[in-house]
Amino acid sequence: MASAVLAAKGAHVDYTVLLQGTGQRASSWGTGEKVCEQSGGPGAVTFTVPRDGRDCAGRLLHTPEPAPEPSKTRTGGTGATSGGTGACELTSPAGKCYADGQFCAGKHRGLSTHGRGGDYLTCEADSDGRWRWSDGVPG
View 1 (cartoon, rainbow, N blue to C red):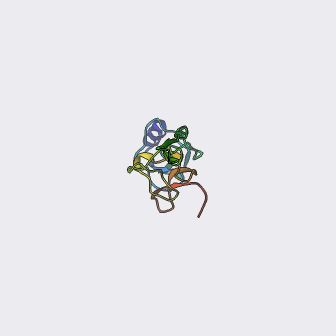
View 2 (view 1 turned 90 degrees about the vertical axis):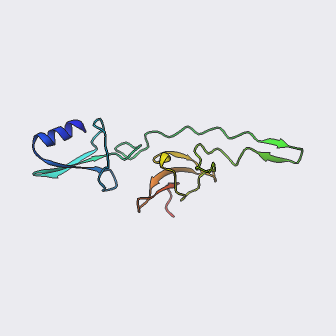
View 3 (view 1 turned 30 degrees about the vertical axis):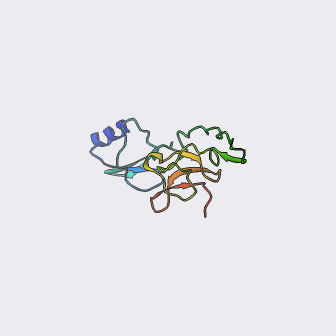
């Protein structure tokens, strides 16, 4: 990104930096970031950079390893179990497993986890730009 911006400035060309797949201007970007795409005409150029936590192909850069399922223990001879409903690596601020369609915390943007129903969910922006957990299946 640094060399692309320097070249544009050196040629006195206006430049814009967009987030890949959104059409929105990047609010910030690092000088070491990779330029996924470059377009434009005389006097103006547009650089497209990957969204946070993704590469130029849109794939997640890091997904936490699934945690082992919590062990279940019997209590008081009643046959009740404790330890939760499954392995959710990331939890909501209330400490609960996320569900498909639920809003996700800002610190979880671009990450993936197993949800309360066992589905593999990714925190990504929906069509309105709101960050929600999604299993990747429309509807």
